[in-house]
Image (cartoon, rainbow, N blue to C red; front, side, top):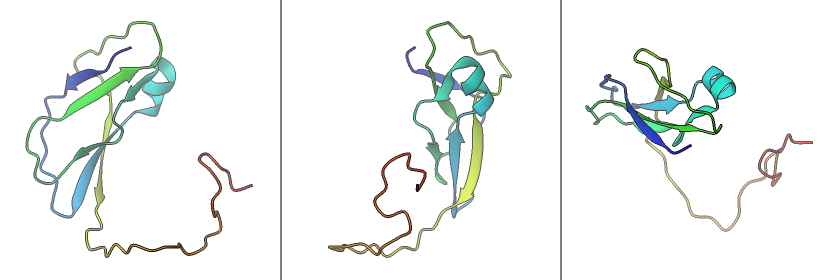
Length: 106
């Protein structure tokens, strides 16, 4: 039940304007209690090294990762980089408002 860094043997070149997100696999999480600890892990456009996945087991039973196991998934998504951040004393209203974490909006 401690974090373990698993080398994947995979390196990628993410195109400019995109980012790679290393995400957990839902089936592995449900069946084995295995998740990506820092989900999503970030692979930026400048990184050229091997992708290493930090796994964490939430269940007390041992689990062994075998070569070829699908332990995570990489999503490559566009990044909005041209933002103007504004400091403000108030925010515009929204439908959800201040409903808390995990709120269903009801």
